[in-house]
Image 1 (cartoon, rainbow, N blue to C red):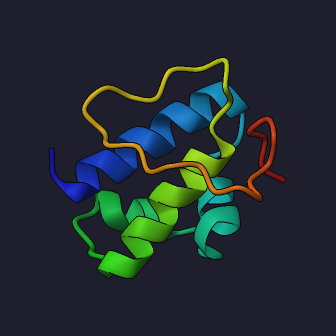
Image 2: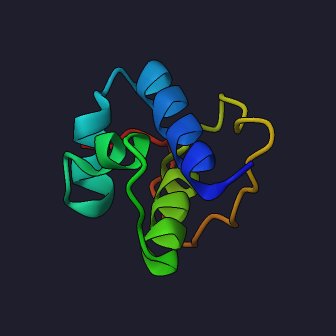
Image 3: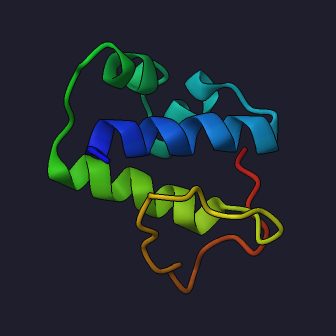
Length: 87
């Protein structure tokens, strides 16, 4: 699975379980509400941004929900929120 597919799978599933829009997720994860539409349209991002977004999802993913199959999960950072709801 390529990196775009992984990011979009994470965003879509997180939107479902959190009730947040993908635009809001983009805003809180990378300060860019148009991030996921741009990726969906074939746009790119740097490796640093890709890793930062995946880390954001890992740090905010609800413990009661399974991580999407086929997407490698980075470790949760020690100062991450306890139960994954973003602002």
